[in-house]
Amino acid sequence: MLKLKPNCECCDCDLPPASVEAMICSYECTFCQSCVNAVLQNVCPNCGGGFQQRPVRPATARREGVGLAHQPASRERVHSRHDRAAVRAFAAQHADIPPEVR
Image (cartoon, rainbow, N blue to C red):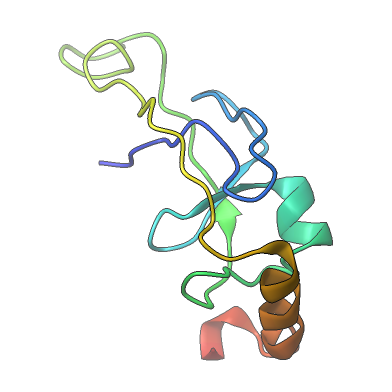
């Protein structure tokens, strides 16, 4: 089950559960589209992987026992442990390698 983290780990902007701006890597590191494109160059600063748009969890339970009411999004804000300069350097080093072969 995805945690649906509430913020971008880079710029700390809010990414509510229904946000189509939220991007995640395979480890669920969460960033906004703006940071993924402008800062990270589609390189996760934590694992080196690429990003995909985070799925939206339905707010309405269309089936019994599912939806945000039953599996709420995380409220724990997460921040990158790497400073912006280190993130940019790491991204630049790996940006030319396609995510599927990193």
